[in-house]
Length: 69
Image 1 (cartoon, rainbow, N blue to C red):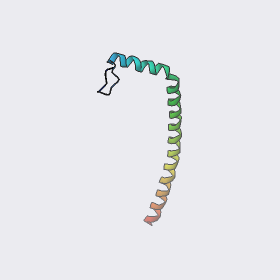
Image 2 (tube, rainbow, N blue to C red):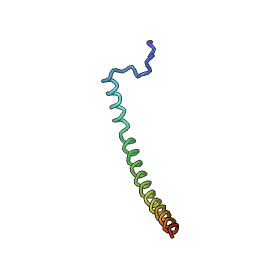
Image 3 (cartoon, rainbow, N blue to C red):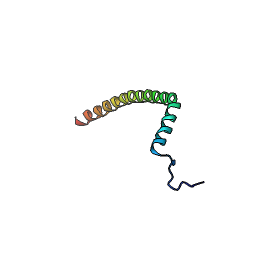
Image 4 (cartoon, helix red, strand yellow):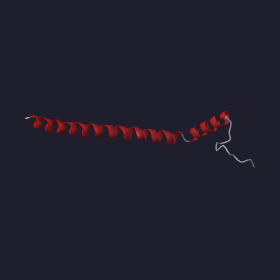
């Protein structure tokens, strides 16, 4: 058995592409579900961060006005 000293898969470029496409086809449902969940989390995070930023800016605005008097 020949040892692989380069640390790669030992496949040619076309062979590697075929194996990647096979993996992608067999796991496409899981990938789609993961992407859908991540988009939902991004939307949830963005909406909560906008609320927090608005509150923070109101607090900064309140204290900056009181400091000018």
